[in-house]
Length: 113
Image (cartoon, rainbow, N blue to C red; front, side):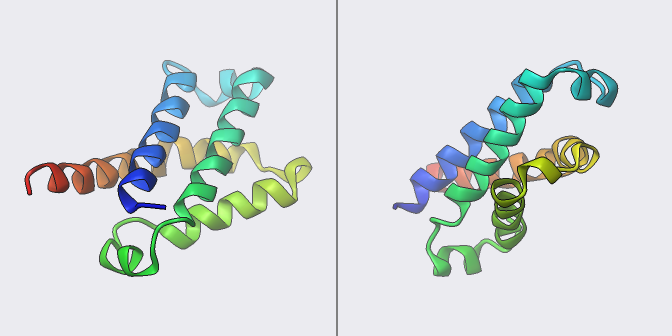
């Protein structure tokens, strides 16, 4: 899979997650099973697609925590019942904004070439 496609799809999953939780706090999040499931699904998809990036590309873009993104996917897929919703919320609120910025910077760099 082309790395450009990987970045675009990763951006899409991040945007979907942000759209789902817009205006929510943690308490609202955990009370809404549909939103929780949508976010967990998109986080797993994010990890799945991140693993498709070429190793060389991953090494060039260490600002993306490739291993952690894929690792989260593995935890979700193999232990759904044990998914820690507090951790999911922290990833969404603390880590995804940085990932969103890093993905946008990569894409912007391509567009200026």
